Length: 255
Image 1 (cartoon, rainbow, N blue to C red):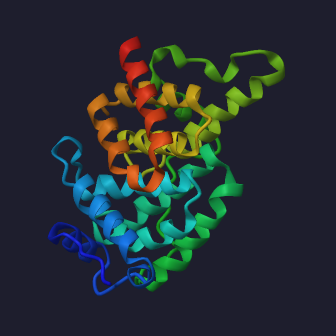
Image 2 (image 1 turned 180 degrees about the horizontal axis):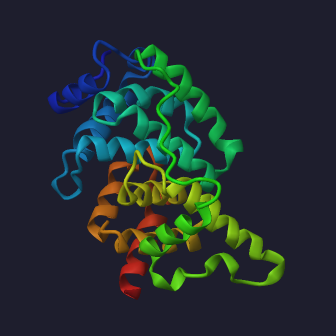
């Protein structure tokens, strides 16, 4: 038995993986028939959830990092590069993951990218994208934090109880000063990526809701975020998708 794929599913699969056929088509043909037809036709061609290929791939890379889907991530990286994600954008997604997932969980993904890029004819030692120095990272981190969340974030680095104030300081100079000021990804893309990290790992609903509000603030609408989670249903599953949808609706209702 061979998987009976729709023409749309075959065409999209061929765009992602030219001249490649998964071994699962031999060992698990019934499963692959339903998965590929769902993921690569029914989902991506649903009029209410369409996004461009680059956006879909960026969100999928972040979701796979968030759920620790390293094997699928390795398969998606070459496809993402074919469908509009640049090598710089790819690395920026991975670097940003450290602030939200920790180096312990991101290291395998960074290692994978550095192994895959040479196979694609790309030197993994890319041009630097830093937007701050060690001297101005706090100042510029506060500026980008205020631009994303609002003016009420002024002075956040020095706020909170004395015993934990250092964490707020690190959020400003490290998370925002070291990461969000980097070139290679715009602020709207970075907030979408952070949203994907948070909803994919689960258990981060307070932070997720905060970054949903930040997405709205930088121009990523409720409709856009629903499109993002809808496109990733085949790879993240329904429970975390539904949790994200609940948070999206709650933040929209709260205004």
